[in-house]
Amino acid sequence: MKWNSDRSLHLSVWCTRLAMLCVAACGVMTPRLVSCYILLSHKPQALALPLMTSILACCLPAAAALLWLHRLLLNIRAERVFIAENVALLRRISWCCFIASAILCTAARASLLFLLLSAAAAFMGLILRVVKNVIHQAAIIKAENELTI
Image (cartoon, rainbow, N blue to C red; front, top):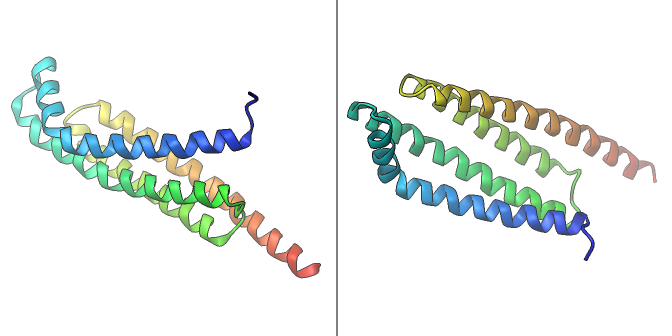
């Protein structure tokens, strides 16, 4: 059995679905996870509410980004790659990364780890903006080529 782009795309779709389940589980289990974290790290109990709020607030843009990513992957599977819809989907996903970054940055008072996660989310948003711009330019070139034929 040889690895190819179809299998890679199929794996990406299933990983995205698994990530959606993980975000949902994280949202449901946040109180228990934060309680365990507070207990094991010997952090003050006053951090529990800010940590829970930050994690739950990040679940919203994460869920939205994963739904849009899933739609993007389905478009790619249908061989609709260089289209305006995919540009819009990448733009939305990047904004979700920036929103999560802002939430995590404000949560950095509770834990320095959030500052690191904030930087990672912002970097991912930036990479997605670059990819969005590439797809946008490719869509323009594709449209121009279709008009000349």
